[in-house]
Length: 89
Image (tube, rainbow, N blue to C red; front, side, top):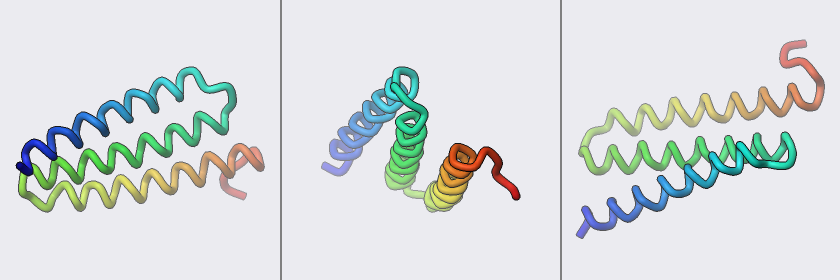
């Protein structure tokens, strides 16, 4: 039963990443693209965690934590660049 649930979740998050990619390409503004990229990072983290559950190993959980930290820092840096024009003052 867990295999069916994991397969369904993989399909849902895979579809969500494809829809986010479509939004990144066809978004009307830069803010929408940043939001779509941030949502894509969250969906990729969910896929890493699901794969970790399916594989039964803890390495993917640690990788998802690193990916979450990098995604957060990159979103903040890009938002700061959009507001001020530079990242480091």
